[in-house]
Length: 384
Image 1: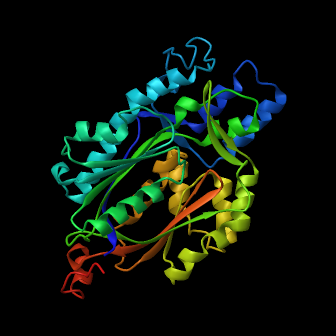
Image 2: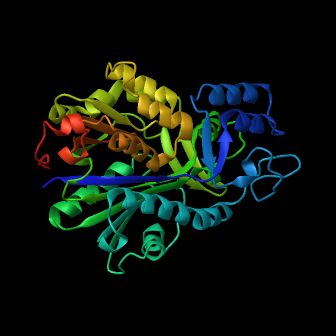
Image 3: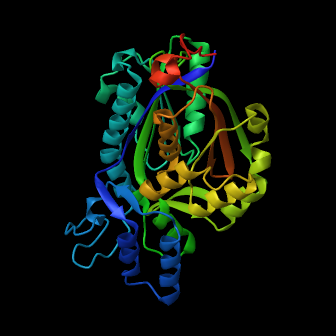
């Protein structure tokens, strides 16, 4: 019996950063020389990002607040110790997790009391008892809920989390699994002349997303059937995409080689999923950055509009690490033009370089079709 996503919820902090304002903030730092200024300008202006969200209100335009992250008068970006950054994560992550989870439950039409399992994923902070525990407390879930947490898996973590949920449903047909991915990337931003750190400062953002997964499709609204998962390691990339814990925050290595690796190796990495997929109607690709999407599109010889959802999420929200691809899946699930049986391939990239993918099929019962189409489907569409 395949698993189904019944509803997807999302949440972002209230403070919005325009890309131009963040660029100017980093350009104004005292250590910026001419070469660094050119690197900053290129990274921000070519990112295809307009806005991002952050829990750090002091980074917002017009803010006069000072903190461990910024000097109020000069707007100098500071470099707090990892412990101070993680304190912000412990304070700010749980409300985002909970907001996304409540949204997902509401959209799925599922009561919190029905949840039997929680699977969380995050790579931007650590604490115990962690986000999985807090969800039980904050949402009033049964204290008997079984919990799993995927830590430090990176941007690709949503698909392993959904895979875990699907396996739970396969073993326990009555299970209701709440999957939540949440990241506070902005607490690890830093002023630097290192090109890789500049790119990280230009693309990463804060956000959370959640999905309700069960072994049954909805009879009153669309759901997304999870038909298969695949994992592949590329030949190169171990030193090109890394995420390590330093004394002054988590340090991202994201070299210019990453898009080229994606372009060279993604077709082979996706071969198992593509062989099962047959016709593909939609591509749901994690927007690690504009150049990654460009290389992916070229490697798979996709039409120019195939990655529009990915590009729009990148433009509006930036790269929220593990949560981002769920924002894209949410668009498919909420699309009023979604057809029953529409087939999608979801793809995300993580450190290593790891390629995680999933085959996703839309299930749209007759009750959820527009009136003129529902007449052609007198019985609900079967989940299988």
